[in-house]
Amino acid sequence: MHVLTLVLTNLRRHRARALIGTAGIAFGVAAMLTILAIVTGAIGMFQRILASDSHYLVFERNVSDLFFSSVTREQVEAIRARPEVESAHPVLFGIVSAADHPVITCFGIEASDPRLAKAEWRAGRVEDFGRRDDEIFLGSRAAEFLKARAGETLAIGRGQFRVGGIFKTENGFEDGGVFLPLPAAQAFFHRGDAASVVTVKLRDEQRGAEFKGALEAAQPAIIALENREFNSSYNSFKILNFTAWAVGICAFCLGGLGVANTMLLSVFTRIREIAVLRVCGFSRPQIAGLIFGEAAVLAAVGVLAGFAIGGTLLLVLQRVPQFQGYVQASLQPLVLVGIVVTAFVTAAGGAIYPARFATKIEPAEALRYE
Image (cartoon, rainbow, N blue to C red):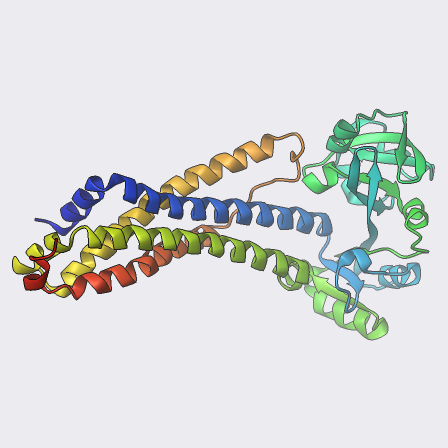
């Protein structure tokens, strides 16, 4: 009888146990897929905020998080004075609160910031941005959950602001945020004349190394990183990715225990059957192959079910009003391959002891087993 036929026959005979093992792998795959997709999407959205029409990102050296970075007006002007620089736009990040919404991202930007010109304006005009310090501008999703309209007065923190305009952006963080003219944001957050970061567009991207070296030599308190370099080195991104993989692998460990339990029970209930196979000429490697084959089938079915569960969950989360805009699933092909490989490695790990036990069964003794 073909080995695959034996594998499938045994799994059908023990459907309940097979289902438990498959469910363990499926939930591990779904958990890792969902977590990594959300984290990757969030990182991608934040990266697009920082890389808006720019080549380099300038921020305070040795800062733990960009929310704590300070780039002064004098440093901004020094950046703009560099001959390699076509444009430089300071951005101040902050967290504000409103009624029933304790955490809202706030962006302090200048009227010349390109993200305003690229946005789809639903109310107000881009020309009005920054004309009054008591005006606040909202992303369309922020306007929706704050139930605010242009011209109304909105309580933000301890301040009262008139809604000067509403616009839609493709970026979920921006679309769910509030925007203040940079001077107003600096006053609101008591940051003096400082911004969090400066996005820099060069006249010639090939002169990036020259710009970076000259700027850091003249301004040692700040650092300039190319967008790709920043994305790969920013500590918060590393921590998020590490946490996502750690949580996913923990979920897979539980799935591996489920596979181990399933395969071990399968071996114990088939001791006489395995003995008959040995008598019929099956070698120890072939017996082990049966056990690993069953684990591989459980993993394959679990991966497919996990992708279906995780994909469905992501679609639901993207449509939940409270999450809309913030959950933008994004997965690279290598991440998907990593999830599949992890699932099969976990299943194989769970099958090691049962396979080892099965290969040590002696036919003569096992045939007398009750």
